[in-house]
Structures are given as C-alpha cells and as structure tokens.
Length: 451
Image (cartoon, rainbow, N blue to C red; front, side, top):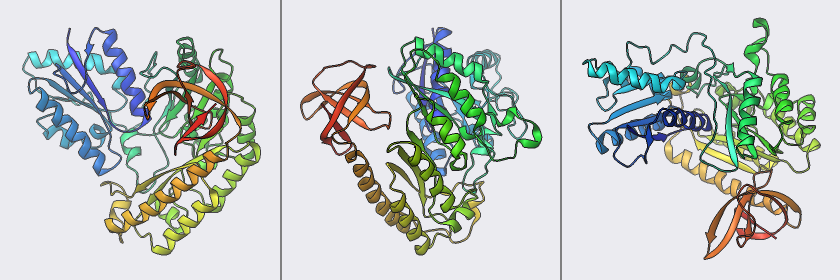
C-alpha cells in the first residue's frame, strides 16, 4: 500500500475535484496521510488565478519534495495548464497532470510509476497528461460520494468560461464552457442526500453558463438566460432528504424577473446570492471587459430584494485595477454604500501575466491599493454587521454543523439559509440537525446568538 498526501489551493471547484481524486485513490487502496508527514506520493491541486497563486503552488510542490526527496511529487490543475514549460523545467515536480484529466489521476499515476521503472523520466507521458484546452473537450465526469464536512457538500455542475475578463487567466486554464448532464447531477445529489448531507452548494467556473453548450451553436454566444440552470434546480428541489440548495457565484445578467421568480418558487434554494461586481464604476468595468453597467447591476439587486424578504447579497470587488483614478474609486465606494451588501470579498488587483490587464498602462502603486482596500474592508465590516442586526429578534432556521468552545463555553454552531453563522449555547442539538430559534444578540461580531 502506497501512502499519498494531498493539498488543495484555490477555489471550491478545485476543492471538489481534490475530494474526488482522494476518493478515487482510496478506492484503489492508497493510504491518505497528512500533507506534512512522510508520504510516497504528494499531490498538489494548484491554482493560477494570480502570480501570487503561481508562487504558492510552486512553494507547496517544493515543500513536498523537501519533506521526502524520494517521493513522487505530482502537480495537478491550473498552474500546470498555463505554465507547462515552467513545470517541465522544475526538478521538484515528477509528474504533471492538467485540467480535464483529474478523473484519470490513478491510472496516470500508475502508468508513470511503471514508466519510471523502465527509466522513462517524462513527467507528462508524452504530453498525454496535459490536454489542449484551446480545443473543444468533453465535460470531465466526476462524482463525489462523500466529503470532509458532515452537513454541506459541493457539487461541480460546470467547467470553463467564455467571458474573457481582461484580468483573468482562467479561460486559458479551464477552457470553454462545458456542463455536466442534469440527470448525472441529480443522481450525485441524491447519493449525497442519502449519505446524510442536507445542503448542497452548486459550484463551477461560471455556473450562469450552465447548459449553454447543450443549445444550438448559433445561440451559444447569447447572454445566459438561466433556463437550463432553473431546470436543473427544479429537479434538485424534488430530492427527498435534501433540505437546502445553495448557489455559487452568479453572473449579474442572469438575474431577470423571470429567472428570479423561478428561483422563488423553489423552496429549497437559499436566499443567498453572490453577484460578482468587481467595480462600481462603469469606466473601470469597461476596462475589465465586464458585460454590464452599474445601473444594470443595481437593477438585478432590486429584482431579488423585491421578491425575497431581506436576501443575503454578497459580492467581489477588485481595488486598484489599472487606470483606476481616485474619482473612479470613490464612485465604487459610493455604489457599495448604496447597495448595502451582506458581505464583500475585497481583492487588491494582482497582475497576472498573460492577461490583457497586465499590459495596461497606469498600473496602480501597491500603497494606493492597500489604502483603498482598507477603506472598503472597513465598509464591508460595517455593512455585514448591519445585515446581521436586521435579523435580531426574528425566528431563524439554522443547520447545526459543529461544537465549538468560545470564551471557555460550549456552543453548537451552524448557518442560516442566508449564511449567517449562529451559535446555540450548550451542547443541545447535534451536527446536521435543523433547528429554529430567535436571534438574541451577538456572541462575536460575526456570530449571532441563538436562543
């Protein structure tokens, strides 16, 4: 029995794929051990979204080889896909596996071991392990049976992106849009529900484009209308034992009156909507190659708030994008104040070689980015607290997840459908139990007390 250690970097899609890879390895008899321990094989599921992500990927791969110089170190995923030449020159990497080949990891690994016994040191097995994602490729079929958590499971429904934002390398790393068949997603979700998971989170690289590859070629470039995604959600909503369906990041343009009304009819879909914004200034959005205006974005928020009672609206914002003047930044800050989000993920722009934005003039100094980031982080903290306060005194449904000790006292903690973290005093209740209680103050600034 060979021991294998796995480490994930990057997004929820990567996390899902690593869970499946671990599952496949265990089914073949490999012993999974912690990453910091001595292992025969180390597998790093890499990220390449920024230059910093590339560096972290290299660091983890080098760390693995340092822990056990005699081990097989396997680089998997996005960093391999966009930096194959660099990977091939890196002596710390023994085997490189690109995207869309993760489901074949076990067979690739075993073939590599066999070839190495013969003296073959080719880390891509004749370039068979890194597919050309500039060409159309089929969806990579993967099925998750269980995950590390006990209450919530991620399901990947889609891969690839056709949006080509000027700052993003992901279309090069993941290829074009391709989707998993709805019947297979429903079967996977049903299996997870039978295994005891009460909440699933639908994830992908651009889930608003789900099913666009199923329609006629001449329609594929149209704006995603959500019909295929709504159809999928309708089938998932029927699964017995499944209590919650949470959506990953949505393209703002998908939120039409018709789409939102369709969501509202599905009682298991959580009123938690992540609409990626990136900037509250139209001129900056244009440079980013985002395909909506600030006013259009605000209309999408209005549609959701008109249908749902106080839904959680969350977003991403990039500060210090090339050419962002002080005036443009202030426009963004004013727009964020106007929308009043539940949570905002604030990112300082990080140059990614190979993207259009990396070659743009007027790159912003790091100290300016830091100052702008601090201002928006303070605003985020204020708005997030205000949103939680709006639920005080109300009865809420909480899916309990784990027992924790806070200030020497035991609490059971979990999340509402809006993804507000709540804590129940004592050890009443158990993980994976749905309970109801009233929000009665704050245990911590980001944890509401449930009684």
